[in-house]
Length: 89
Image (tube, rainbow, N blue to C red):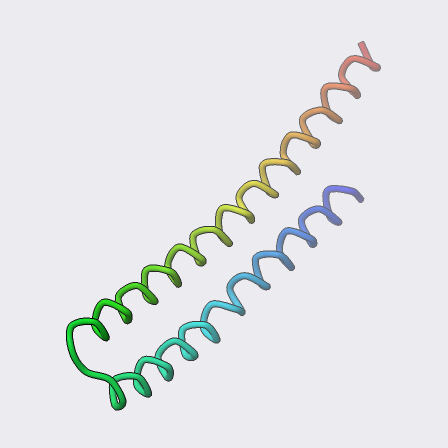
């Protein structure tokens, strides 16, 4: 029962991450299109690159958070299984 609840929670977390990605992508694309029309020059290009890098880093941080949460669940599962194994001898 707990394994099913854990799997369900993990799938909801992953769905949450994946469902946010396209929205962020569309938002950044529309912002880039607006900024291209209003600003030109080298500084504007560096600003756009900085924004893209910041978005990529944010994406990676979100993925790392999901991975760490999955590792925590795996550790708890292993500890529970070790406890059961010790109890059953």
